[in-house]
Image 1 (cartoon, helix red, strand yellow):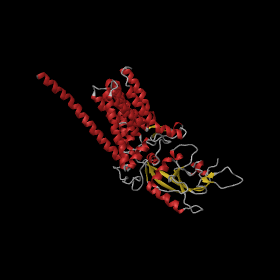
Image 2: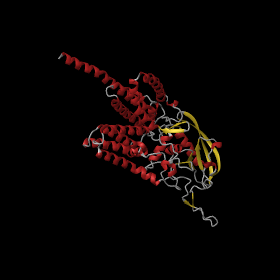
Image 3: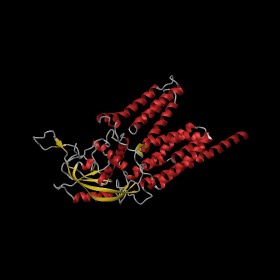
Image 4: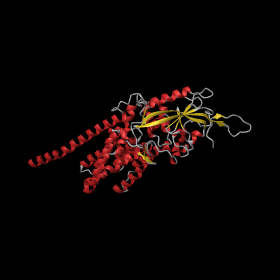
Length: 487
């Protein structure tokens, strides 16, 4: 009895520290999530207000990427030039449910990163089932990585994509661990397939997890116990998820296979860009393996600990001083001064009519800036019903979804009948009109699509704003006599 009691007592003593460490870890994660929400929503700064989309009472702080996603959400489709339709459709659903305010939108990513941390813990527990410390340090290390914290501060879809990818990986792992083809196994494989089908709306390559799971199934259990019904259900749900993307791409000449658009969640390093969502998912997948190797080999500990400390310092700077986030990385600060800028634009538009007395139409130099200005400026153009308030400058290539929406360069109005020139059956309804062009470009940097498409272009006003915590000068040009771009 004495020995049995001693054994029981020892077990309790051994499990007590692990339990307390787990409680401390998740308490720390919840506290970190609260901090991320405060930084993302601006609750720790005087700049944010409750009105969407102009979050700042003195000007907006929404990013160009978020504005572009919201513009796409206003045009529900099976896909977009920038990528899969999942994130815009998610925001469309939230809008229909009455949850499109800035507080909710910026809450999504931090909460999803918390769910993503659970997948890291789950994987680490399977990698090292007899070492709970591996799971604890894996979750902690994952949350100290800069890509993870950057993804938690903005709503560009990176956290959504990474979470769905890892949940699908966890579901596939769980399905492979089962045996036979009974109801329980069928449910596990169906859940895996449902997550793959849903994940396809956010990341097309997610389907590669299915062949990986099949290989693992054959290696672990052989052909005799192959779950044919479960795999069939998984494949059917994955194919179902591909219906809308394939149909959309077929109608648009498979544009996403040749698009030059960087996507909804790009991270720019020099002239190169990559998906932040995929980077975060990769971090979630490899962190448990690296931590396990650090526990197993002293050399790995000596290498990884200094690297983790440097990454943790970077994450702390990003969270506590987001103005120091380098250019090209997602920043929660966005554009400050949007409301004042939009007021200046509308004032100039109303005070400088064209020769026919009509007000100028608005053009922005980038799709993100066009979407951002369009979120604060509401204009209906009778000449082009359904068009955005602010057009993106015309481009010879389809570099954004603005190319699929009504534009000022579209030849949809009847042309002037001329017996000597009969080829021009239709023209732009904005022919002869004036425009205001908003950009950061100087007069010498103006694109040919502006200088060649208007009779005269002159600088009207310069407006100082703050973009991602950095001072930027936006210039408003008056462009007179639109004549379409010469071939």
